[in-house]
Length: 377
Ligand SMILES: *Cc1c(COP(=O)(O)O)cnc(C)c1O
Image (cartoon, rainbow, N blue to C red; front, top):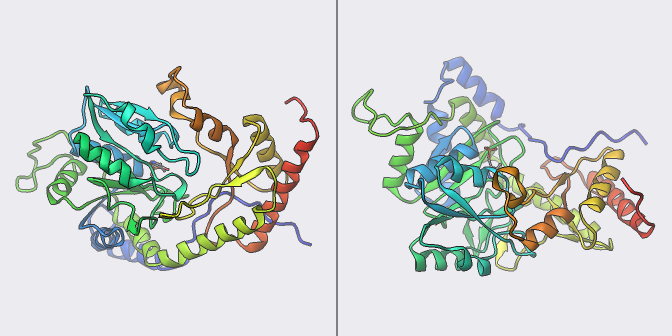
């Protein structure tokens, strides 16, 4: 058998209209932050999320910062963020001078646990920032009920979940606004890029104001607020539009990959696949497996064994309360246990059934090795 090529965790597929649209930008010289692809990408993405407005920005972190700023989050405010997420969710709160307050996750989905939310709400709480982690929607109904009861804003971080639905509604359509990322490893990509979506026309206008240096749309060089340059280029939007044209095929391919994993991992003792709740239709961003026993040492040994066979993997995110800028002595037991036991496997559109079979076989060999005592690292 010929040697199998190295399997990365993620890889974009740019085989649609990406090239033609980018060349159109170059040929027309519309390469900066206005142009037909920006307008078309924003309009198509808003439709995709079932909302009226979409504001394209230069990355998903900027989308979060822009959203929180336009919503008036500032010093003295607290924003509730899941303890288990990518650090950008917490950092965006910090950029505003506000404080991220962490809440533990639920073991079934690794998402913010609605039952733990109420105990974290104080008189300073202004917003809840649920994250749809690894493409599985957060349980929005109880989160929205609590937000309504306490008069809180909800901003969804949907950076990893383009196209997922919660009780039949697309993520991005639940919160006051929602943010997405189009980084190279996300469900669809623009290289670097992000989007804020909302149904609120006044909020959309504020998002546009802050995105473009705070310049008054009626009076050039008059800046009523301190804004940012968070604009997306027409070139990035050209790639994004071409990706969005193919999103049904992209999601179908990713779901097929997830189904192959589910089939083959079912028989492996000692691992649990992060599945779907009955009320959710997730999008497989990164297939996540959890060792049912052990900790970070065993998980790291599994990752090393996969790598030795040419298969890349990622550890599940590290809890926010253990990151140096956010260190706390409080215990968030669910986040701590499953973060230590979790890893992400290769998940992308062009992954083949043979790739998935090889990955699962490699994983099976690694986990079977635990019957023998592990050597000290
Ligand atoms: C990727 C990601 C972001 C940040 O997006 P960038 O485009 O990389 O800035 C924010 N939140 C979550 C949950 C992410 O996965």
